Length: 291
Image 1 (spheres, rainbow, N blue to C red):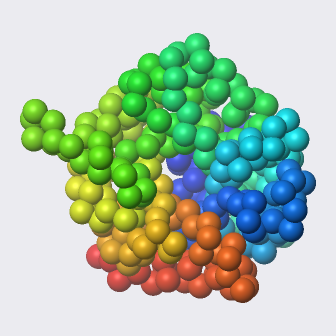
Image 2: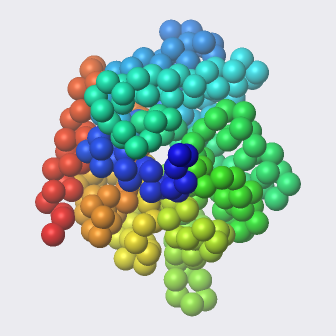
Image 3: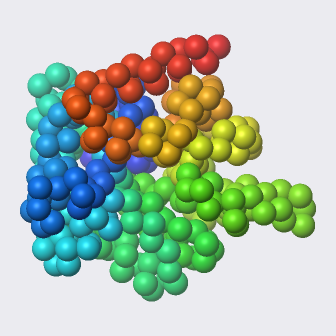
């Protein structure tokens, strides 16, 4: 019988099965490619998938790095998502991971940061879910709930990650501004994102950079149980891994936070070893934090 669990419920199952909270970011910078082509971008990412699929619980391909190559890039992005599903499913069957969920063992988070009026958002959702086949997508909730709802109207096996307190240096220009009620903008954004769906608080995740530990801690304290945080910023952007685990981990579940790491893995001399070490450090920090 087809499972009807939500995306985030199934993500939790996968994290538990693999004992991992690591997401590998797939950002094929042209400067890192042997030649500036869509095919080279695909090969770069394919290699990272093959090296890290035993430890990664999700992959986050950045759409822009493929879109810059035009139609050829789009084709290679579609090819990459299909490869992730096929390759990681084989790995799961071999090692017995996630036996309840046969479709695949590693999720894809399409990092596209979409956000537009309803009819346009519907087209973006169709592109992400039906054409590319992504399991989830990052969205920009700046235009309000109706800009998110088309992504949430898809079947509940799909996930949505709303930008909330991002890891870039300029995030404070808007996201930490104080509202009339004394709250920072990012807390209001979190509220709006969670109110965009009637499926419950575990239908939407929030992108909260590991570069602002105070904001992450404040958000975790305000969020209901079941809400996941996608926490970029570890490594190249200077985020503190242990502090982020302490601030963002959902102590009620021992999970609830996913760490996407791109350059810290792709630029390592041994990406497989780098991913394994990162996962070890995450789990050690998690063990220290859990009561």
